[in-house]
Image: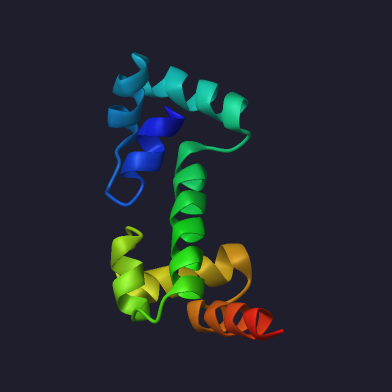
Length: 104
């Protein structure tokens, strides 16, 4: 499952699709996933998307809207909202912090 998610996190993933990959019903998949990974599948996928986006923010001059799209967010606004909610900073703030930490 982890390999499947690592390869597909940037696209829309339905719970039923993830469950089918494991050969489980959506209900059993949700319970097993949460027990194994310590969080629900949706949160795990969001973390993968945010990790990927943060690497792009730090390692490129790519536009934030392009990073949002590549990471699987529906818009730059959605990306900014999710990043602020789960990481405590906006994409621009994260980029500035990464650039400043590299300069030191």
